[in-house]
Image 1 (cartoon, rainbow, N blue to C red):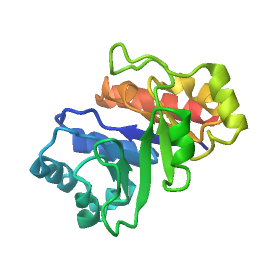
Image 2 (tube, one colour):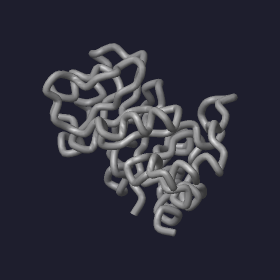
Image 3 (cartoon, rainbow, N blue to C red):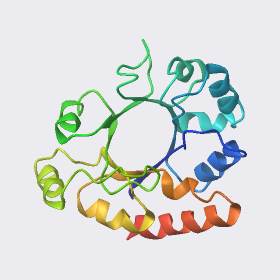
Image 4 (spheres, rainbow, N blue to C red):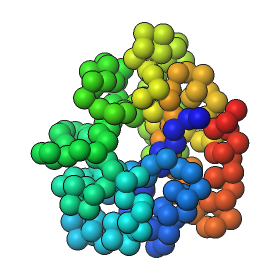
Length: 198
């Protein structure tokens, strides 16, 4: 089955911890806490508002030393945070924006995001950067593999296409956070479940 990761929206949202808990309870594999502008105390507040049982399935994008302090399961590397904290033993993932970056970081990460695959749902004007032929070629060369996740404009209905292009899963953002009401979340999760298995 495809790996599904959810990335948080940048602003803190009312009831966000409850949404994260519900996503994990529903079978989302990991939640990436991405709050680039957040103060350390705000990140601590979010982490501490979550059940400790969720911690192994959380990855931090910023304030990475908190991952080791709280026993979170992963850290995510990017231009702001290019290396994991000293001695960190959890999962290491990375943002990649070229196929060359994906290949370069295959050995030093547990999995990678490649983006943008489709036009972004959450970022206006953020357009797909790869053709279908580029993605097929990269999969044939083993650059895109089961440890590469598609990011950028991925909606549940696009999961079969993501699988066909050789990705091991997808990272979702816009399609999750645009409606986190109980009914909206149920609907989105049911769609993920349906298309993830096709």
